[in-house]
Length: 211
Image (cartoon, rainbow, N blue to C red; front, side, top):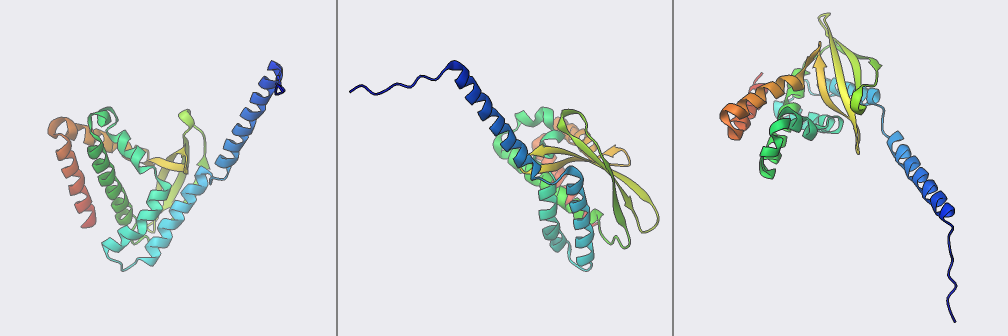
């Protein structure tokens, strides 16, 4: 006995494909909608900074590093930021060098937060606004009101990743921290090579630790 052959009309196939595409898109949108909004990520970062500083008043530097690490790693795309600082030279590094640089950049970033936001006293953060910009990036403008009455404008730029919205740059009073690093690191790479750059980051980490 011959098996029955079912013929699907081309229009039906097109409809099935269309419905499948819609379902996939809806699934992706639903997955993304579960992520905190960019402004919420910044609020979590800044509240985390205040809480850590309050709870680590007399802690040693190593303890501050250990406490700050999870907060910075879950709110920043550190690997992406590391690549951007030497973007045009990134492809010239082998895998081991790339991993070494990302690790050094990570350590410096966490150490900088642990030192910069220390003994904040009555300081407070205020999220001002969130807006869209080119290439799917979102800047969130905030203010840091210091205990001595100064106001520092902090703008965090975030992009969407599989882990949600993550910070890829910070501007303090209009100055891009990533742009400063990019200028410094590229010059060191050109004049001294990769080992010189790693040594420079090591010196920066050590300097932060003694501030």
